[in-house]
Amino acid sequence: MTRPRPPAVWFAEEKPPRKPRLSRERITRAAVALLDADGVEGLTMRRLAARLDAGAMSLYEYVGGKEDVLDLAVDEAVAEIGLTGTAGLTWREALTRQLIESRRVMRRHPWLPALMSTRPLLGPHALAGSEFFYSLLQGAGLEGPRLTAAVGSLTYYVQGYAATENSWRTLHRAPDTEADVRGRAQEYIDRRKELYPTLARHAELGNDDFDGSFALGLHTILDGIEAQLGT
Image 1 (cartoon, rainbow, N blue to C red):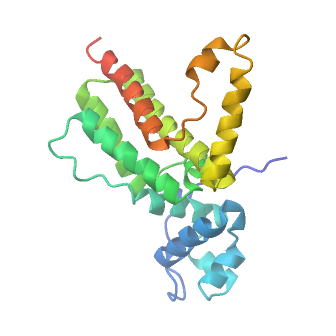
Image 2: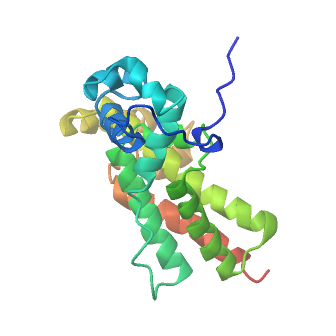
Protein backbone atom coordinates (compact mmCIF):
# COMPACT_ATOMS: atom_id res chain seq x y z
CA MET A 1 0.00 0.00 0.00
CA THR A 2 1.33 3.41 -0.98
CA ARG A 3 1.92 5.62 2.03
CA PRO A 4 0.72 9.22 1.75
CA ARG A 5 3.51 11.74 1.58
CA PRO A 6 3.94 13.92 4.68
CA PRO A 7 2.71 17.52 4.64
CA ALA A 8 4.72 19.89 2.47
CA VAL A 9 7.69 21.61 4.05
CA TRP A 10 5.96 24.95 3.55
CA PHE A 11 3.28 24.08 6.13
CA ALA A 12 5.75 23.70 9.01
CA GLU A 13 7.46 26.53 10.84
CA GLU A 14 11.23 26.37 10.41
CA LYS A 15 12.89 25.67 13.73
CA PRO A 16 16.34 27.07 14.54
CA PRO A 17 18.83 24.18 14.59
CA ARG A 18 20.87 23.40 17.66
CA LYS A 19 24.10 23.45 15.67
CA PRO A 20 23.95 26.08 12.93
CA ARG A 21 26.87 24.61 10.97
CA LEU A 22 24.63 23.87 8.02
CA SER A 23 21.63 25.78 6.69
CA ARG A 24 18.57 25.04 4.62
CA GLU A 25 20.14 27.08 1.83
CA ARG A 26 23.29 24.93 1.74
CA ILE A 27 21.26 21.74 1.91
CA THR A 28 18.99 22.92 -0.89
CA ARG A 29 21.84 23.90 -3.20
CA ALA A 30 23.54 20.56 -2.61
CA ALA A 31 20.27 18.73 -3.27
CA VAL A 32 19.82 20.49 -6.62
CA ALA A 33 23.36 19.52 -7.64
CA LEU A 34 22.76 15.91 -6.60
CA LEU A 35 19.45 15.78 -8.46
CA ASP A 36 21.12 17.18 -11.58
CA ALA A 37 23.77 14.49 -11.37
CA ASP A 38 21.75 11.44 -10.37
CA GLY A 39 18.03 12.23 -10.55
CA VAL A 40 15.37 11.73 -7.92
CA GLU A 41 16.24 8.07 -7.34
CA GLY A 42 19.85 9.04 -6.65
CA LEU A 43 18.97 11.49 -3.90
CA THR A 44 19.07 10.00 -0.42
CA MET A 45 19.61 11.72 2.89
CA ARG A 46 22.82 9.77 3.34
CA ARG A 47 24.24 10.80 -0.04
CA LEU A 48 23.15 14.39 0.49
CA ALA A 49 24.90 14.46 3.88
CA ALA A 50 28.06 13.03 2.33
CA ARG A 51 28.02 15.77 -0.30
CA LEU A 52 27.87 18.31 2.53
CA ASP A 53 30.54 16.48 4.56
CA ALA A 54 28.06 16.11 7.40
CA GLY A 55 26.35 13.33 9.30
CA ALA A 56 23.03 12.16 7.89
CA MET A 57 21.22 12.79 11.15
CA SER A 58 22.41 16.41 11.24
CA LEU A 59 20.23 17.18 8.22
CA TYR A 60 17.10 16.45 10.25
CA GLU A 61 17.76 19.58 12.31
CA TYR A 62 16.84 21.55 9.18
CA VAL A 63 14.39 19.36 7.23
CA GLY A 64 11.96 16.57 8.05
CA GLY A 65 13.27 14.20 5.38
CA LYS A 66 13.66 13.63 1.66
CA GLU A 67 10.22 14.99 0.78
CA ASP A 68 11.08 18.32 2.39
CA VAL A 69 14.36 18.40 0.50
CA LEU A 70 12.55 17.80 -2.80
CA ASP A 71 10.10 20.62 -2.07
CA LEU A 72 12.98 22.98 -1.36
CA ALA A 73 14.95 21.86 -4.42
CA VAL A 74 11.97 22.41 -6.71
CA ASP A 75 11.53 25.96 -5.46
CA GLU A 76 15.25 26.64 -5.80
CA ALA A 77 15.19 25.53 -9.45
CA VAL A 78 11.99 27.45 -10.17
CA ALA A 79 13.77 30.59 -8.94
CA GLU A 80 15.90 30.42 -12.11
CA ILE A 81 12.83 31.23 -14.22
CA GLY A 82 13.09 34.97 -14.51
CA LEU A 83 10.04 37.15 -13.91
CA THR A 84 11.66 40.47 -14.77
CA GLY A 85 12.32 42.24 -18.04
CA THR A 86 8.72 42.17 -19.21
CA ALA A 87 7.93 45.87 -18.80
CA GLY A 88 6.35 47.25 -21.93
CA LEU A 89 5.48 43.82 -23.32
CA THR A 90 1.96 42.67 -24.08
CA TRP A 91 0.54 39.89 -21.92
CA ARG A 92 1.17 37.46 -24.77
CA GLU A 93 4.78 38.55 -25.29
CA ALA A 94 5.47 38.41 -21.55
CA LEU A 95 4.00 34.90 -21.20
CA THR A 96 5.90 33.66 -24.26
CA ARG A 97 9.17 34.94 -22.85
CA GLN A 98 8.52 33.41 -19.45
CA LEU A 99 7.42 30.03 -20.83
CA ILE A 100 10.43 29.76 -23.14
CA GLU A 101 12.62 30.41 -20.11
CA SER A 102 10.65 27.81 -18.12
CA ARG A 103 11.45 25.19 -20.75
CA ARG A 104 15.15 26.12 -20.64
CA VAL A 105 15.21 25.67 -16.87
CA MET A 106 13.40 22.32 -17.13
CA ARG A 107 15.96 21.20 -19.70
CA ARG A 108 18.74 22.28 -17.32
CA HIS A 109 17.14 20.29 -14.49
CA PRO A 110 15.57 17.19 -16.12
CA TRP A 111 14.03 16.04 -12.82
CA LEU A 112 12.03 19.25 -12.44
CA PRO A 113 8.95 18.70 -14.69
CA ALA A 114 7.88 15.50 -12.97
CA LEU A 115 8.32 16.93 -9.48
CA MET A 116 6.45 20.11 -10.38
CA SER A 117 3.47 18.02 -11.47
CA THR A 118 3.32 15.83 -8.35
CA ARG A 119 3.77 18.11 -5.33
CA PRO A 120 2.35 21.36 -3.94
CA LEU A 121 4.14 24.35 -5.45
CA LEU A 122 3.89 26.59 -2.41
CA GLY A 123 7.44 27.88 -2.12
CA PRO A 124 8.02 31.62 -2.46
CA HIS A 125 9.48 31.40 -5.97
CA ALA A 126 6.75 29.07 -7.24
CA LEU A 127 4.04 31.29 -5.80
CA ALA A 128 5.65 34.37 -7.38
CA GLY A 129 5.57 32.58 -10.73
CA SER A 130 1.93 31.65 -10.30
CA GLU A 131 1.05 35.22 -9.33
CA PHE A 132 2.84 36.42 -12.47
CA PHE A 133 0.87 33.98 -14.64
CA TYR A 134 -2.49 34.69 -13.11
CA SER A 135 -2.06 38.46 -13.06
CA LEU A 136 -1.07 38.64 -16.74
CA LEU A 137 -4.01 36.55 -17.89
CA GLN A 138 -6.45 38.22 -15.52
CA GLY A 139 -5.26 41.59 -16.79
CA ALA A 140 -5.86 40.40 -20.35
CA GLY A 141 -9.51 39.76 -19.50
CA LEU A 142 -9.85 36.20 -18.25
CA GLU A 143 -11.75 35.38 -15.06
CA GLY A 144 -12.91 32.35 -13.09
CA PRO A 145 -12.74 28.89 -14.70
CA ARG A 146 -11.39 30.27 -17.99
CA LEU A 147 -8.49 31.89 -16.18
CA THR A 148 -7.69 28.69 -14.29
CA ALA A 149 -8.00 26.61 -17.46
CA ALA A 150 -5.69 28.92 -19.39
CA VAL A 151 -3.02 28.78 -16.67
CA GLY A 152 -3.31 25.00 -16.52
CA SER A 153 -3.11 24.57 -20.30
CA LEU A 154 0.08 26.61 -20.54
CA THR A 155 1.66 25.06 -17.45
CA TYR A 156 0.96 21.47 -18.44
CA TYR A 157 2.06 22.10 -22.02
CA VAL A 158 5.49 23.33 -20.95
CA GLN A 159 5.96 20.63 -18.30
CA GLY A 160 4.84 17.86 -20.65
CA TYR A 161 6.90 19.10 -23.56
CA ALA A 162 10.04 19.46 -21.45
CA ALA A 163 9.58 16.05 -19.82
CA THR A 164 9.14 14.35 -23.20
CA GLU A 165 12.08 16.22 -24.70
CA ASN A 166 14.30 15.32 -21.75
CA SER A 167 13.40 11.63 -22.05
CA TRP A 168 13.98 11.62 -25.80
CA ARG A 169 17.35 13.36 -25.57
CA THR A 170 18.45 11.01 -22.81
CA LEU A 171 17.61 8.01 -24.97
CA HIS A 172 18.99 9.42 -28.22
CA ARG A 173 22.11 11.37 -27.34
CA ALA A 174 23.87 10.93 -30.71
CA PRO A 175 22.40 12.97 -33.61
CA ASP A 176 23.09 10.14 -36.08
CA THR A 177 21.16 7.66 -33.94
CA GLU A 178 18.23 10.05 -33.58
CA ALA A 179 18.14 10.75 -37.31
CA ASP A 180 18.15 7.00 -38.03
CA VAL A 181 15.24 6.33 -35.66
CA ARG A 182 13.22 9.20 -37.09
CA GLY A 183 13.95 8.16 -40.66
CA ARG A 184 12.95 4.55 -40.04
CA ALA A 185 9.74 5.64 -38.32
CA GLN A 186 8.79 7.86 -41.25
CA GLU A 187 9.51 5.08 -43.73
CA TYR A 188 7.36 2.69 -41.70
CA ILE A 189 4.40 5.07 -41.88
CA ASP A 190 5.01 5.85 -45.56
CA ARG A 191 4.80 2.15 -46.44
CA ARG A 192 1.38 2.05 -44.78
CA LYS A 193 -0.04 5.26 -46.14
CA GLU A 194 -3.16 3.48 -47.36
CA LEU A 195 -3.98 2.74 -43.72
CA TYR A 196 -2.70 6.04 -42.30
CA PRO A 197 -2.93 8.61 -45.11
CA THR A 198 -3.11 11.67 -42.87
CA LEU A 199 -0.16 10.58 -40.78
CA ALA A 200 1.92 9.77 -43.84
CA ARG A 201 1.26 13.22 -45.25
CA HIS A 202 1.46 15.41 -42.16
CA ALA A 203 3.17 13.69 -39.21
CA GLU A 204 6.71 14.86 -40.13
CA LEU A 205 8.39 12.22 -37.97
CA GLY A 206 11.79 13.38 -39.20
CA ASN A 207 11.35 16.81 -37.64
CA ASP A 208 13.98 17.28 -34.91
CA ASP A 209 13.44 21.01 -34.41
CA PHE A 210 12.38 20.99 -30.76
CA ASP A 211 12.65 24.77 -30.47
CA GLY A 212 10.47 25.45 -33.49
CA SER A 213 7.89 22.83 -32.54
CA PHE A 214 7.69 24.17 -28.99
CA ALA A 215 7.20 27.75 -30.18
CA LEU A 216 4.51 26.73 -32.68
CA GLY A 217 2.62 24.70 -30.09
CA LEU A 218 2.83 27.55 -27.59
CA HIS A 219 1.50 30.07 -30.09
CA THR A 220 -1.33 27.71 -30.98
CA ILE A 221 -2.42 27.57 -27.31
CA LEU A 222 -2.07 31.33 -26.94
CA ASP A 223 -4.20 31.81 -30.06
CA GLY A 224 -6.91 29.75 -28.38
CA ILE A 225 -6.65 31.78 -25.17
CA GLU A 226 -6.77 35.05 -27.08
CA ALA A 227 -9.93 33.88 -28.84
CA GLN A 228 -11.59 33.58 -25.42
CA LEU A 229 -11.05 37.24 -24.59
CA GLY A 230 -14.16 39.31 -24.82
CA THR A 231 -16.48 36.33 -25.40
